[in-house]
Every structure is written in structure tokens, then in C-alpha cells.
Amino acid sequence: MTESSLNKEIQKKILTDPLMWKFRLYGFFKNLRFFEPYLIVMLLIYLGDSDFPLLTIGTLFLVQEVFTYLFEIPSGILADKFGRKNELLLCFLFYVSSFVLYFIGFSLSFDFFFVLFIAAALYGLGESFRSGTHKAMILTWMDKNNFSEHKTFVYGRTRSWSLIGSTVNGITSIFLVLFLPNAQWVFLVAIIPYICDFVLIATYPKYMNEHKPRKTTFWKEMGKGFKDIFVAFKDRRLRKGAFSSASYDAIYKSLKDYIQPIIKIYIIVILANFGLANNSSILTPDNLIIIILGSMYSLFYLLSSFSSRYAYIVRNWFKSVKNSMDILFYLFAGVLILNAIFISVRLPIVVVFLYLLIYIFQNVRRPFCVDYLGGIMKKEERATVLSAESQIKSILVFVFAPLFGFIADFAGPLVGLDSYYSIPILFVLIAIVMVVVNLFLLSGDTKIIEEQKVGNSK
Image 1: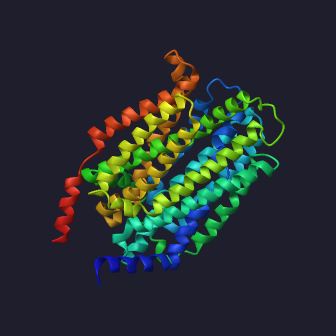
Image 2: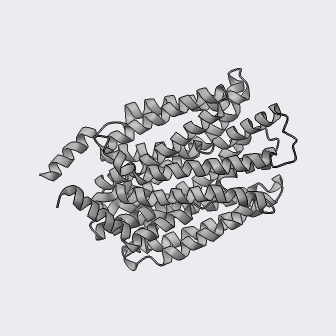
Image 3: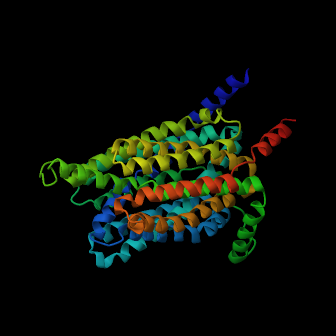
């Protein structure tokens, strides 16, 4: 049997495995966050005439990331000690509690904004207990079934289902926001798919609740966990890969929803220019924002799903996984500069297309990162290292979120321009920093990886 035929047989076996279906459904339900396409718009409306709305929103996300960061290492240790499946079940309880508090917070006046901060903190806890854990469980399953050579294929397929969930999420959220009594009800509806995921995870086999006997105190384990990270990151390849993955993801996460205020501005201007701003029909600004954002997010995630699904094919276009990661880093920076130009000249169709590329690049690149890191870290370090990578991303996001918010609010006036140009200035500054940082700190090691592959083949 040829190598190509053998790979197809293994891929067929992977896709028909019952656990693979559970992995896919897990990602599908996890991404049914019906509030996501409108969260920033909802917060902008909630904040009213605040002088620095994007900075305030960035601070709210900062709180979320601080809690993700603070509990990232403890969550990895708890997963190793008490079982990954048990920890994953706990994370969904945090998520559900967060959704309830978001519903309550948006139902109250601005005087109770602190409720949203508590909701963000609980969401951050859920993220810290989830991140890295499910990926480590998938890696365990692949090891058990000798699928380890197909990490990009497996992760690309599971991620594609997550993105299908995001596509369904966008379309469904339109009807929910339009027809529910108030927009904040989407937080309560989002509890339903998360309960489905809780039940799904509870049916995972016992061996996936992998844990080690607890021989020392929790605090000693905490210290050992941090020490293990520093030891692991002495490997230059692992260090570069982890920081490349985390920094890219942090910038993406901090910017991906800036399309919401951009589209809101475009819609209000277009309706005003055509004399439709006060129309009481379906063409009201609020309804158009809901319809356009929901449809747009569905399109983004639908095409991103295909991108992730076939990432393993794109992988063959590059001479190494790390090389592909570097090239996509530069492409992201280039798209940000183009976006800044077309936002400035007010071409919304091109802006939406460029934002689509940002989503596609992210969902092609992420399987490459998992493949790269999974191939160079020790099996017993997987949960800890993956949590550490997520922790680095959290640190960067809680720096980037308020900083980007501040620049997006004030950059234009600070250089003598209208505030409309603040977001384009933000994009240009980020692109420049991305190119410099990746060029001098994160790129390279292609030769090392290729030599390692040759050595292993011998």
C-alpha cells in the first residue's frame, strides 16, 4: 500500500471513530455564543455617551483576561492531579454562571456596571480551566490510537466543526436578538448549548480523565509547574513557537470584533445619507446592524471552517510548519495595513473582505501551531505547556485590550485628525510592531526542524 493510500485509510478511520464525533460536537456547541456578534455594540449602547467607550470595553476584557491568566497554571496542575475531564466539566459551570450575570448586568442601569465585571471574571475562569485541557485530551486519544502523525488533520477537522457552530451562531443570533424581548436574553439562551457540552464531556471515556497521584502539597505543585514551564521554554524552538502562537492569537483576539463599531459607523452614515435614519421600518439602524453583523459573522466563520478543515493541505505548500507560521504572521500585518487604508477612504465592502481574510488566516494558522508545538514538547508536559502558551496569550491580551481601546478612542485627535481615523492608526501601528517583532524575535528555526526530521527518519 502506498503512503498516500495508507494516509487515506487512517484518515477514514479517524473520521469514523465515535470519539472524533464527540470532539466535533463539543466544538460546535462551545461556539454557540449567541451574544458574540453584538457584544461590543451592546456594550457601546449600554455605555451611552461615555467619553472613552472602547477603553472601558477594553478594561472589561482586561478583567476577563486577568482571571484567565491568574488561573492558567493552577488549572493545568489541577487537570493533571484531579483529571482533565473533571476540570472541563467545572469550566462549563463557570461559563453558565457568567452568562446569567451578563443577563442581569445588562438588565440593570450603568450604576451596576460592576456586575458585568464579575461576569467577565467568571468567563475568564471558564477560559482558564478549558484552554489546553481539551487539546491535551485529544492528543491523548491520538497517542492511544497511533494517530499522532495526523495532528493537523485531526485538529483541522475538529476546529472546522467549531467554526460551523460559529456560522450557525451568527444566523441564529439575528433571529434571537430581533425577536426576544430584549437583546440581553441571548445570554440565557446561550446556556442551552453549554449544558449540552457539559453532558457530552461527561460521556468521554475514563482514560481521558488522565491524572497523576498527588504526592506533594498544592503550593509545591504550583512552584513545580512554573519551574517546568521555564525548563520547557529553554528549548528555543518551543519558546519561539509558543510566543509566536500566543502573540498572533492575542492580537487576533483583541482586534477580531473591532468590525462591530466599524460597521455601526458605516450603517449610521449610510442611512443618514439616504435619509433613512428615522425610518420606522425594518431599515432602522439597530435592526440593520443586527442583520448585517449576524450575517457577516456567519460568512466569516463558514469560510473559516473550510480553511481549518483543509489546513493540512495548505501545510504542504510550505517547507516547514514554522515557515508557514511566519508567513501568515506577515500576511496578517499586511491585511491590517490594507484595512487601515480602506477604512480611511470609506470602502466598507473591501473592509469586510479584508476582515474575512483575518479570520481565515487565524483558522489556517492555529492547526499549524498545535502541530508544531505537539511535535516538539514531551508528552508528559503537554497539559502544562499548552496551558502556559494560553497563559502567555492572556498576558498579552490584558495588555493589548485596554491599550488598543485607548488608541482606538484617542489616536486620531492626538495627531490632529478626526476620531474616525483612530482605528486605522491603531491598525498601522500594530502591523509595524508585528513585522518587527516576528522578524527579529520569533521567526526562523526552519532549518532546525528539517534537520530533526531527517535525524528521526534515520
